[in-house]
Amino acid sequence: MKADVTIDCIGLYCPMPIVNTAKKVKEMGAGQVLEIIADDEGIKQDMPNWARMTGNEFLGIEEDNGKYHVFVKKKPQ
Amino acid sequence: MADKEKMTLILFSGEMDKALSAFNIAIGGASAGMEVTIFFTFWGLNVIKKNEGSSKSKGVMRNMLNLMNRGGAKRLPLSKFHMAGVGKAMMLGLMKDINFPQVDELLSMAKELGVKFIACTNTMGMMGISKEAFIPEVDSFAGVATYIADARESKINLFI
Image: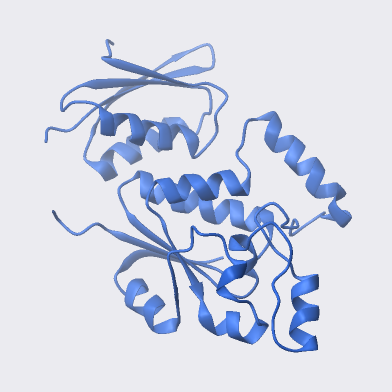
């Protein structure tokens, strides 16, 4: 999957990946895709839930050697 | 703009681990777009006290209490295995190991995300803690009616 912006949350635990995601999405334009790279397994459930609560679109997760690449699309204005 | 959903937390406890949990939840809520308020009461007031010195107040009893119960985000004990500070030092080591923020860092982060801090005036009066004892991040000083007004509109309401 292709992203417009990527943030690195490797080594960070709850709630930091969510906080960093919320901050970054705020700066992004509508419809842009954010990739979050993290290694805390909690993100597998946390990110779809965060997206549902905030109205952003959860696009999916790609797992690769204990790293999770999570894709979120910012909602239209 | 539509009204934001609300979350209200009461932080009654003054221990480091419980404060970590409270700020973690507050930050999670704020990151999900909620309007979060933390009411600090009883020992929870210690979390928002300054790290320096102890507060002066009226009477021997209150001064003694404030001397023993100094507070400050960096000076909170652990609720379990504190062991005169040895356990806390070990816990801080474990936290550092995984880059987990400390209470004062989570407190600043919550503030940055717009979490509101309210100190309970009732317990402040009883324990003889003056407004000057608190960090400037405290937004206001209020009582139970303010809490009820907020809590009855809140989707999430926790007592920690």
